[in-house]
Amino acid sequence: NIVFNATAHLNNNCLNANATPDIDFESTIRNIIAVLPGLEGIPSNHAIWTLSPANINELRASNIRIAMEGKLFPSEIKRKHRKVHAHGLGLFGMGKIMNEMWARVDGFTKQVFGELFDVGNIRYHRLLVEYDVGRIRHRRLLAECK
Image (cartoon, rainbow, N blue to C red; front, side, top):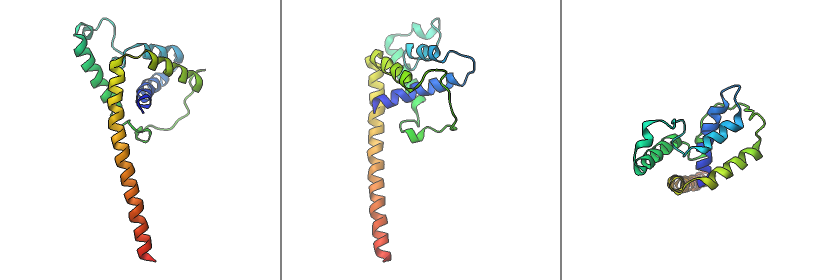
């Protein structure tokens, strides 16, 4: 769903932040979600802020789509499995922060993630049809072998 896409985008940023030792993980997460999605890591004095709002939104949408490339489904997120300690920020705390993030996010960001949801939803239904067709073929082959 849409929230999964936004959460995956946030998780990518959070995992990168958590890989850095000796940082305050919760404050890092709060700093990440305070920034407009797609503009993480851009300093406030950067020249990008002189662009028109339409150009900034176009750049944000592009950055979000690039960051989410290949990550619309949980199984597409390829990373080495490791135990990650959230330095006191548990599942409940992370959920609370993500809920706050989604409540504060602007309409443009929701639109971009909505478009990603539509792409993922179409792909999901295609995969489901392929799976069902494969099951039917498999049953027919089994029936022919008997």
